[in-house]
Each structure stands twice: as structure tokens, then as C-alpha cells.
Image 1 (cartoon, rainbow, N blue to C red):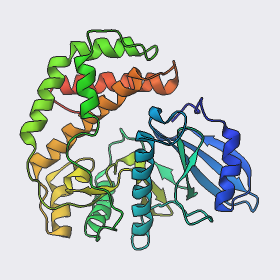
Image 2: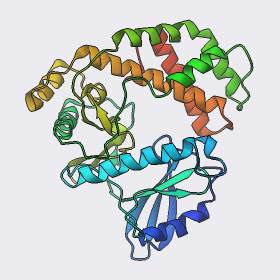
Image 3: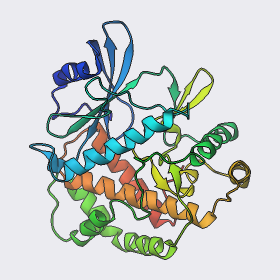
Image 4: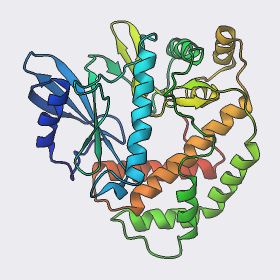
Length: 329
């Protein structure tokens, strides 16, 4: 996120790092990614660490209970899976365990969960970057290796249905009365009301495409250029928060651009990607994006850079859906 978290006292981060044996002498906010907040911490020994504070659902205000506790547990299982995978897959950038029982995730304040990663001095791309053929080949090879790996016991299942579908359908049903979350609430309501027919149609399209897509594998979930880290000639995958069991197309739609890309994956794995499943996951991503942005604007929010970007991406994604496309690269 580009904006620092307004409801988190950053002075809590330094003592929180002591659970990992890190005596931080420097802490710099890193305005990267979207959804979570990040810092680069420097220890007394000069070593650097990448610190992530994941935002738990707003229902968590007042403590980790109810839906927040569920979200904390789900994220913990995803990080545990990444740590297990990193034992054999050297391209997995996984969190480090704390010194108090080996936890990979610890609660912080009312609605945050902290994890710590080794700092890797590399170069990442952006979600909208168009990967070159060579770069796509590298990622497809990594995914083929990941998909062939036996799932750790902690691996979550990732259902085909968009996670935010119920919330999106509620929002569509409530466009007739004011939304009061903040400065972008009413513009978001008006946008949804104008395109309600399109969104209902695309949800029906999604339902028509749902079927048994085949046996699941371990998928990353978001292997776009923003989660690829190039370091000393190697390609690493970061952000394993959505790792889980699903069909390979959950990953491949974000990477493959040509028949040659799909053929490369098929040659490596013996499994031919299904074009209909690729299209279904592309549509799923767009519907989930709309649901996420709408949930943000229906909740309390301010006039921030992140909110403005979310408004832009919500409008762009809905326009793409209205045109019959998606928010893919």
C-alpha cells in the first residue's frame, strides 16, 4: 500500500520484532504491493528484514475474534504452506519462524497480523507489466515445478467461486439507498447501479462455466509480474498469501499469452491447459476485484492515494467487463 496505516501505531513494530530475535535500529515504510503494509527493518547487526502487516477484516476492531480469527487462521495456514514448500522449492520466498514456538504469524493491535521475511535485494515488476516471452517461459517452468509438488498438509483449498461473491451480490441489491463509507462510497454505488445488468450477466456467465475442472494441484494464486522478484539472475516468487489447492489454470491465466506458452507447460507436466478454464479464472479474478473494491468503499475510508487508485481500478475493471473482457494484462 502507498499510504501508511492510519490506525496502526508503528512504534509497536519494533517490540514486535523482538519475537524474531530482531533488535531493530531502523524501520522504513515500503510503499509496495496492494492490500498489506510493508516495512524494511534493519537489525543491530546490520541485517535487513522485510516486515508485513496484513490487514484483518474490520470486524476485528476490539480484538481477534469472529471473522478476524478465521482470517488469521487462514493466512497462517498459507504461510505455513509457503514455509514447507521452500524446503524443496528454492524460488519460494517464505516467512521466517519466530523464536517463541516457531510461529510464522503474530497478531498486532486490533486488526493486523505480522510476518517477517528475509530481505531480498531484487527487482520486481508491476501488475500491468507485459511479460516478455523469455520471462513467461521462466515463470511457466516455476509453475510446472510447483504444480508437480506434493501439497503440504497445511495447504488450503481454494474454491472456484469468487470469495467476494456474496458481498458483491449484497451490494448490487443495495444500490437503491445511500452508501456512507467515505468520499468514494456514493460514486461507487452509482457506478455499480449503472452497470448492475452487466455484473449480473457476467455472474451468470461464470455460473455457466462452472464444472469439474480436474484434479487440483498446489497453486500460487497470483503469479503476476508484481510478485516476481529477480535476484542475481534468478526468478523468485513472493506473496504466498493465496497459495492453495486448485487447478493449474488458476495460475496459468496470469502468465500464458500464446499457444507456445501453453505447450511449454503441457510438455513439462503432461497436462494440457483447458482454454475454457483459463477464461473462467480470468473472469473470476475480475469479479473478485470488483467485490473487493466495492467492499472497501462501503466500509469506512478516506481520501487517500490507495483509495483513489482503487476507484480507478474499479472503474477500469467494470468497463472491461461491460466490453466483454476482463482486467487481465
